[in-house]
Image 1 (tube, one colour):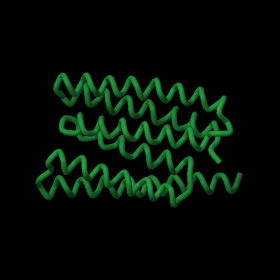
Image 2 (tube, rainbow, N blue to C red):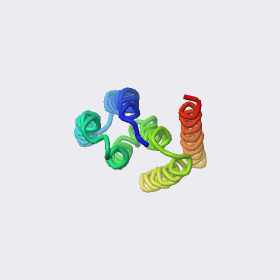
Image 3 (cartoon, rainbow, N blue to C red):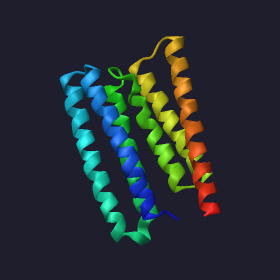
Image 4 (tube, rainbow, N blue to C red):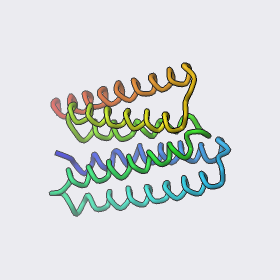
Length: 167
């Protein structure tokens, strides 16, 4: 069962992290003006969306699972666009792809966490493929990024489940 404090917890840590990663990409990655505009627009939307859904979680206690799924889907979709537009300017932007599987790890089972990792890594590989990575070193870096997504997500899931069990 999703608890309101889980949504607040995710918002408290993931939203500022995502904001910092995106703003770093905009400030230090020297992206095109179009990439800056689209990235800041997406960032603004997701900040408002997450604040609104966090507030709504108080009123929708019976529909927390639905709310958490909508949040994950919207945030993941926005992260795809952010990585696509800033990826060639700012390599650390891939870290946005860690957020959805880790949030799933907090909200859900190990099986759902693993499924989210699989979907996330497939999409990340597709984004990199479309962007045209060519060297073995670039693809080696991608493999390490993918492994990190699995390891950290399953680790967080186990931590949360252990905490809940011992509580």
